[in-house]
Length: 263
Image (cartoon, rainbow, N blue to C red):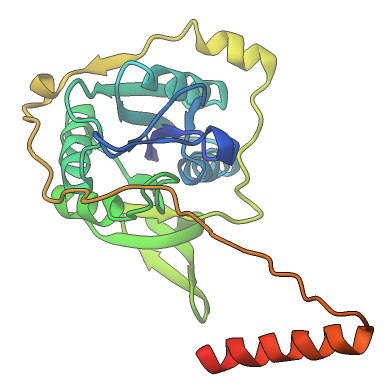
């Protein structure tokens, strides 16, 4: 079974709050000293694909990343985790392409790769958290879409999927090809690559395509970020006074009542 896993590279969400800054002009997070990492939900998707392949003993996993040159690091890690191939579509224009642009680009790359059975994406990204790429990608490819999946196994000529819902879990049986979005679960925590696999990943070649190679043109986003900033939490402290404990308790009670009346 041919599995394609779409990966996104983002600013490390675990950077200390004091180091996080926003450029008010470009309305983007400033990279600064923060690392770029693979989106965790995308790594959950890759781990799910790896476990599926290992359980069935056959299959091929192709990792795709639509990113600037720095996206090579994400693909190298995917290869170190034991993906079979890595494909990078170079983003040399838009800083933050919208989900529709990403979906059209990934769909063009997938069609260029050839036949596939299952395309996996993370349920959302750890930076903007839009969560639309999976559904839009399925629409672009003209195949079914199932969201919030945390487990996949073969079922006849198709697959059986377990997906999370607000009310519990659903079991869905589907024919292939299809697109699924993967959410996190205790069973798909990304593995840590072995040192040897990390070294071997740098000996593997990557396929690199530009937008022109895919016949895709960079377009303006269908939405605009009006404002981006860091929430500011203000707090104040007022001390109660009094000569005795009773006076201080009485004053505190009066202040609490005043706050309640104001609300």
